[in-house]
Image 1 (cartoon, rainbow, N blue to C red):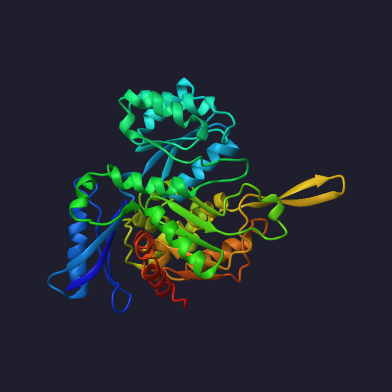
Image 2: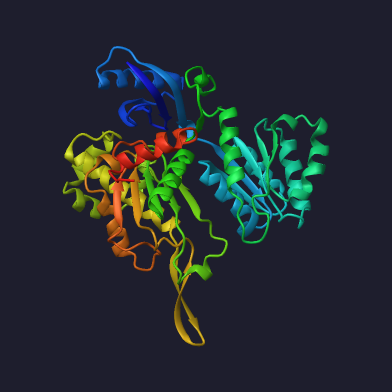
Length: 453
């Protein structure tokens, strides 16, 4: 069978391969699934997923013109961020990295101290971001931090995205430095107060990720199979969220996975709260590394109220222990599905707690008032659910509705907000595909959401 495009998603637990037609009728053709073989060689899981795709399409062979990929295997893209002031340059660099799909493992503000350097070494990042200073403002800290980072000798990409006034002397210093080939200089991510210049850094992270595919065994050789773009999976989901924002307006994507729960939002604040939203990014992604239904299954379970869980599952202690002992990310029985549902519910609710802003009660000379703080999602008209648990289990829309109803002081949309599923489970594929086939990606997303453009 001749297929226009295959898109692989190499995740922490599963590897998916989606097949698409782009020529006559833009369409999602089918999916193949396999375990991710991160402990050996991820190409093995990729090969098995293609074999599964053949079986699902009932064909003996597959030929394809192009193959794209996204990856979050082996922890995805580990980044550290160093900046000047946490609420300014650090936050700007952090937002850009998260939007690009990175997992941030360490953040520092101000001059790097010995313990900062030690913790950055312990992370052993795949990429390092150094920011600091508005353009033509403070420049010393960012420059000296960059030198300290370079002198560690990680042999990984080092991206400078701080005060442009440092560019010349950075190039001079690195002229004969052994880390010169790893240095990348980009426009300031925070060029002036309350302005986040995220797009150039996000694009550079995508490009750099593809150049340094080093996150799992076999990933360095994936380019033997994948002949088009490779990007971080969360970054590709953000790209799809951006497409949905273009199509449908203010939007939130909730993505529950085996290792993390990510929330992506693109939303303007209400007129009522706009004056409080200065410096808040239009596009926001939060990644919760402690919230997942497989890799972090035990972490989530341990925080849950055991008695309430027994009641919701309608089982006794012995049955629950048996469910836990035989837990699988591919639930088959009704009781297993109920358990995964409860885990997904905890992941969604806690991730929303951390992502969404609040109405804070304050007391003034004129009496009690409520002041908004954080991301305002009250104007969101569409919430999209993706990730295995939210797509394949029934009635997962209710998880979000319950959260809205039980959290009146969170800056969430009304409970009547439209909630849809990524039915074909293609958000990650559409995101990476959109880098070259934007119109086609939009069409496939609208079909997956069962929404007309």
